[in-house]
Length: 153
Image (cartoon, rainbow, N blue to C red; front, side, top):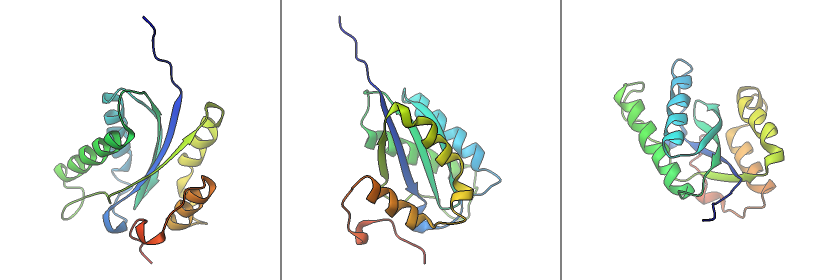
């Protein structure tokens, strides 16, 4: 019987609902570990997770056993519940709908991991909106600004 061999690396980006900057330094590492656990539970490999108070980047080695949209739905649903159960924020925590997803080759893994792990330094020079729109342009993804995340000006 033949086996399935794949090499799929996906960099995803998603934001906190209404772009509130509420992911706190005091619990963000726990959140990233929890998200890594969700990814592993779904039989994928977490390669890097990092972000800012209002958004995160997740780099995943994907197995062909699940749709990306289903994995992102699981990550968002379980992590929202985890944050709310621990009462890390006032009110109810939610992620915005939608996400960005960008594929990379094996040779780019180290560069993508470095990029994600240096988010704090990166955002001293660029806003999340500038970063996200730049990614869409680099990957030649056509978009209408009105359908992007809600932006905080």
